[in-house]
Amino acid sequence: MLEAASWQKEHFSKAYVLAIATRGGYTIGSWNQDKDGVDVTLRDRGLMVDLQLKCTQNPRTAGDHFVYDLDVATYDKLRDPERCAPGYMVLVIVPAKLDEWLLHEPTRVLMACHGYWAKLQDEPPPSGKVTTAVHLPRTQPLTSKSLEHMFQVSLQRIRLGPEEGEAA
Image 1 (cartoon, rainbow, N blue to C red):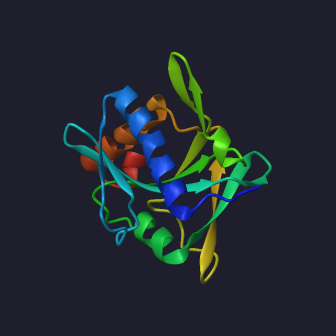
Image 2: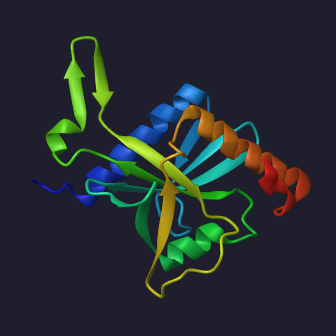
Image 3: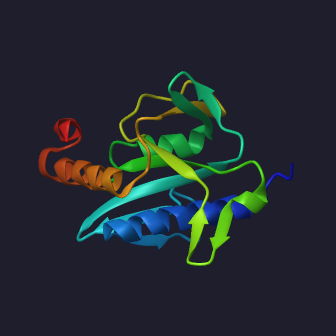
């Protein structure tokens, strides 16, 4: 089995988020540099949501969660309570075989993948010194509906502040 290159995973996960964001009517912006722990920023009117994207062919599981070891520096940037846009991690899971990622049919092209999200903003300090395990519940698939929820959290944080805004 051929492991996909890092850049292939990055571009495929961006394409996946672009498709979902487009379906939801949101705009997406990419960053040239990932210095702030953000791969893409989604916008809905004046609201923003920041996403760190990861892609794997071999997801680790623990019960009803996927687990991804995120580097501490990125985790700390996304959990910072002073962020103006809520920070999330998205894990895109693709088939083991690179040839199966995209399925061409006469009337459509299908992306063979699924993604899950976890809100990292306001999370506790990392458990490790180099990486920390991020748990992404199977009950939190990345969909247009879940993006809508993320924007509601963003709006509530603006209106009520970090602590009260989490009830959204």
